Length: 93
Image (tube, rainbow, N blue to C red; front, top):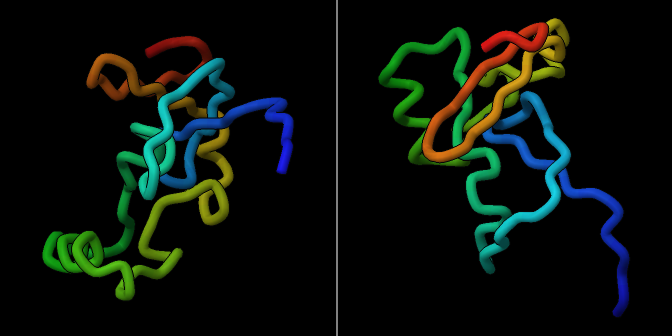
């Protein structure tokens, strides 16, 4: 099977701020290293957040902040480099 990759998109935070990248490292059974490393929970307390972190079967889309349920977040960009997560808005960190 042959294929052509025209672009690769990476998101350090699940369902937020996808960025086009030039290269990446891919690990078997994991995917792109650093992709979706973080997620923002919403409308849940710490104990429930810890529970859904450990048990994927307990996760529901409305438990997470995402572009789907908060499209205004499309104005913000997150980058993750050198173990640092950075939020930018209007070109300012």
